[in-house]
Amino acid sequence: MADPTSTTSSTVHMDTARALFARLSPIRYRSKIHYPGLIWQVLRNKRRDTAVLKREIGGLIAEHGKSLSPEILETYLESMILLHYLQKSGVTVYSMMKPELMESLAEECIRVLSSGVQGELVDVGVWKGGSSMVMKTVNDLLGSGRTLKMLDIYDTMDFKVLDDSDPIEDRIIITALEHARQYFGTEGVATSIAEIRTNFETLSVSLEDVVFLKGNLISEDFPFDQVGDIALLRIDCDFYTATKNTLEKLYPRMQPGGTIIFDDYYLEGFGERLAADELRAAVGDDSPLIRAGQSAVWRLPAG
Ligand SMILES: C[S@@+](CC[C@H](N)C(=O)[O-])C[C@H]1O[C@@H](n2cnc3c(N)ncnc32)[C@H](O)[C@@H]1O
Image (cartoon, rainbow, N blue to C red; front, side):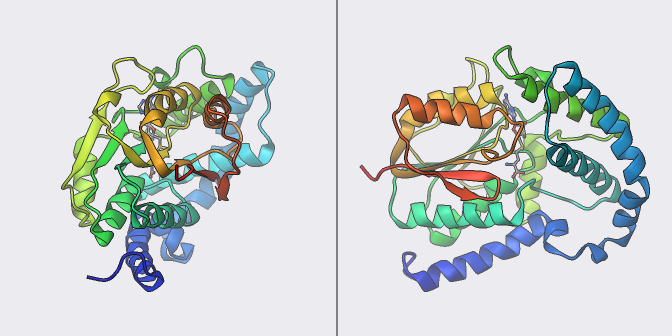
């Protein structure tokens, strides 16, 4: 077997992983001209869809005396509109991650596992399983034999994932998702364990040593106690309370030299960053975060 710590071996693993990335989100990896019907529908209805959603969501934002920069609002609306037309056109997308995020996640998994950091791989906020499949694939390529724990509510993302401590920005995002779901009449961001299992099988990613932990991350009943020592923790549950609760429960399980990735740290309007900053301040760590697109990579000291 190849030495997993060598640069050549890491390059080979990245190349293999890239073949998976292209299947996780084909529309981001291929030219849009491969999807003429889909793109035509998006363009034809874009002005109308954007105007309807902007009126409702913009109204809500103004009502609370808040603002989102127009570019950020446009970006959110574009993603919601695209998701709808993807679902309608039968183009399967398994991940919300952009290519640079898949790359950096795979590279960080290779770094952590190759340097012998002990513990499990933990993915919090799973949706259709995309990020989890990246982590599992790297684990299997390296022959690391780590368990992958996947934590999610495995349902739809509505107001039940928030509580009173969540900032108004998080409420606005949930309301926007609700409006989009009603307006388009699609499943939106719903998911289920059965669907994710099928997705793993479809993309030939092994389900061995994969554990699904289901529940509401803001609840005291969430089975955090079923997570062991952690080598790499990826957090992508978007909102303040869910991220805060996850960090409070799982940060103590982080192993020296391990990594925490905050998927939406640099995305304006999500409460995730506040929770991450509060935890880092509480533990007195002001080490620089590594930026990868909208996400932040926090490498913990080797101890
Ligand atoms: C942005 S998606 C995750 C995207 C995924 N990592 C990928 O590769 O595409 C956010 C996920 O967080 C989950 N989530 C958000 N708040 C939650 C909560 N309070 N409890 C459990 N799951 C939650 C949602 O169900 C959703 O699947």
